[in-house]
Image 1 (spheres, rainbow, N blue to C red):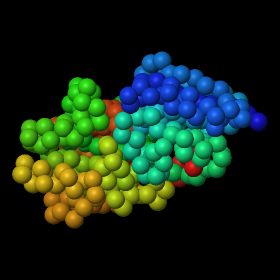
Image 2: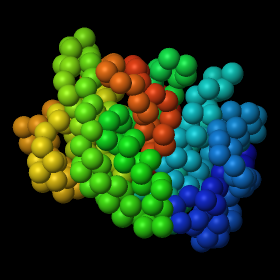
Image 3: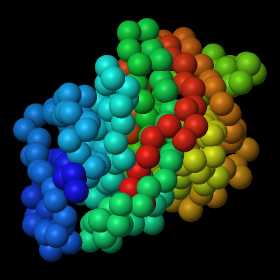
Image 4: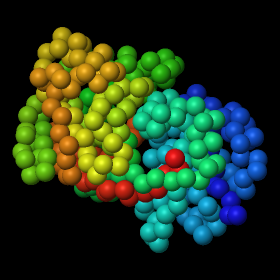
Length: 293
């Protein structure tokens, strides 16, 4: 049997990658596998973009949402357009995708991968002025990238840094006006944020898109109009239960395509990483890749 390629990121989350790999060795000891430990940013991309696809059965990622993002993008940008099934063993901080898969335990994830059963999931294709990016989780504009940039400066606070950064950004209360076109409908407004989701969860267990499914061929678009600081403070806790979508300042759309053209162009956050800028268009690619499930 061909080997399973294991890509492990020792820097994911609280640098748990190596420890998790050692814990799952018993599960993989009877499976032919080859391991590569990443050494630098974009290394997972480089690996999957250049490996000989015919040499491997599939790819197992030990890391977080960002490592998985790099692996997917490396594969989607291959010159030969070839693909392999991908499995994720959670070793990150948020593990948003594995929240949706209801599989946050690394041992449980390894067991599923070792069964080699697969399913297809959608991807979002993000087109900016200078690049094409693929997202399997969530893409955000407005407050989310600002929150992430701030949270990265507070890594010493651990997982709670995202919640603290969110509260700080609410206090800052920036103006963010954008033209937003969803399936040819123009709903321009002054927004706190726009999130385009393939999964229910983002961050540390936030149910930002409670209607989302990873294989329904739709982008779940959540917009929050600019409102008062007090309103945002009251809205924030509801994100963890998904009840925020019932609030009048929140609009929930399901679409095939959208375009974000802000008055002032800023960064995007894609699968937890600051990548690309506006203006951008986002399309859904139904059942584009296989994952181990």
